[in-house]
Length: 464
Image (cartoon, helix red, strand yellow):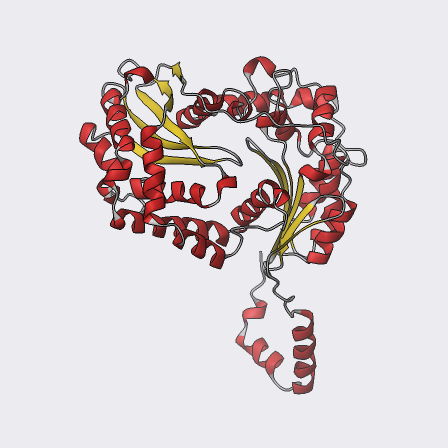
C-alpha cells in the first residue's frame, strides 16, 4: 500500500520552503534529462542488402519495431499448407541463444510485448516496449525472427493452440476465408489458417525450408515507430537474413467466379458475395473501391446507432429482411482485390436478403450520388486517420506499405504514411472514378461463399 505521508500539507510546506538555488539547479537538470528527441518525418529507404527500412520518431513513450516478411499464406504450396499459421504459433519458442522461458522472462521484465501477425501476404514480428528499453530488446527480436530452432517437442506442444484457432473462427471469418478460396483457388485463395489434415505435420524441416525460402533480404521490411532512426538503420544493416536466390516467382493471380458452401447447424446464414476489384498496385483505383464501400454502407458509425439504413446497400437489404445485418466489403491485396458485401440473416429469410444485396451491388453506380460519395470519402478519411492515431495500427500499416509497396517502387516511397498524404489521396478521388468502379463490379462476374443454415440461400447461378 502506498504511504500517505507525502500528502501531508505540513511536510509539503517544509519541502517547498527556501532552497531556491537547489530547486533551480534541479529544474535545469530535469529540463536537460527530459528534453524530447527531435520529431522526424517518416522516412523509407532500401539498404544495400535490399532490406527496406521505414521509421518515424514521433516522441511516443512506447517504441515499436516490426520485422515484416512477404511470407504469408499465398506463398504456400500444397505440400506445406499452413506453414505461416504454424510459424505464427511458434513465435517466441527457443532460438540458438535463448530458451522459450528466457525469451518470455526477458521481455516481461522489461515491460515489453512480442506479437506475431500472419496474413495472406505478410508475416510480421512486432516488439513494443518503453523507449528506454527498446535497444536492449532488439537482440531478442532478431533472435526470435532469424535464429529459430523449431524443436520437435515445442512444436508438438503448440498443436492444441492451432486446433483452438480453427475452432474459434466465427462464421463471418470463415465466410471471408471461403470467399478467397472461391475467387482465387490457389495463391491468395490459401487460407491464413492451417487445414485440419495438416495440423501436426509441420515438422522442423518443413518450417526451416519455408523460413530459408521466404525470410530473405529482398522480401524483408523493417519498421520502427517512436524510436531513434539511427538505431533502426543499424538493425537493418546487421539483420541476419539471407540474400535472395532470385528464383522464386509467385503464382499469378486469377479470378474465378466460383462458390463454396459450408452447412452447419446454426440458425443463421452468413453469406459473402464479391467481384474482382483492384489491388494496391493500382493506386487510385483501389482507393476508389474503398470510397465506394463506405458510400454503399458499412453499418452504423455510432455505437448502437441505426442511421445506416439510409445507405443504398443497407436500405435495400433491410427492405427484404429487417433482421439482416449487412456491410459492403472491400479487400485489396498487392495485385488483386475483392469488392462486394457480407451479410448475416436468419436462415428462413437469408435467401431474400442475399438477392436484395446482389441487386444493390449491381445497381451501385446508379444508386449513389454526390451526397453518398462525399459521405463515403469523409468516413474513409476518418477511418484511415484514426488508424494512424494508434501505435499498433500505425506500425501495422507502415509495415504493410513498406513490405508490399515500397519494396517494389524505384523511389522506395510510402504512398499513404502521413495525414496530409491520406487527406490528399482521398480528396483526389473523383465521383466518376467511384462510379466507374461500381460499373465494373456490376458488369463483372461474382463469386460467393456461405456458412450456416443454407436451405433458403440461392446458388450463385441463380443470382442475377
